[in-house]
Length: 221
Image (cartoon, rainbow, N blue to C red):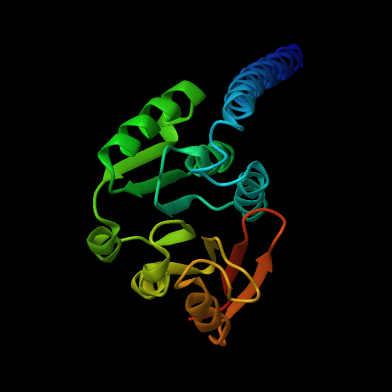
């Protein structure tokens, strides 16, 4: 009988030890998350005004972040890095879901600035930045992707969508910047918006709170 009591006590101690280890690991993870969150927030706040002309508005970055986190997307593609504002939001979301972002930029100066910004924001490990022509690279990427953000040459939006569509997972989301409901946005955006809305398996809405973001979910193949 004593042997059984000792065995039970040992089992209880083991369980308590495992629970303590798990609690400590969870606490460490939460602390790491909190530190990263604070670092990213400070970085975005400090650069918000400086980036206003060449990157997405703060509200659009928050929109992209929310879409990714709410849907638990893990494989993101950004077409048009610029200096990394939207990429920082997307990569920050990837840190929450355990995913990674591939982002493409053709201009070397902007590409190098984006690399510095990703490092400063603390999210570089969640980014695979490519210096390349998206016209070619988007077609070559294997995928699959569950989230795409297009913010490069607007006249190519429809072609980017067609190139990535077979690699976009069902349930995935294709977003595009500078879209207006009236079609009076930058040249090429109206044609893209009309095209993607015409597809029966894509559910498309428009968020006009910032710079105009179309949000298209792939509901079936």
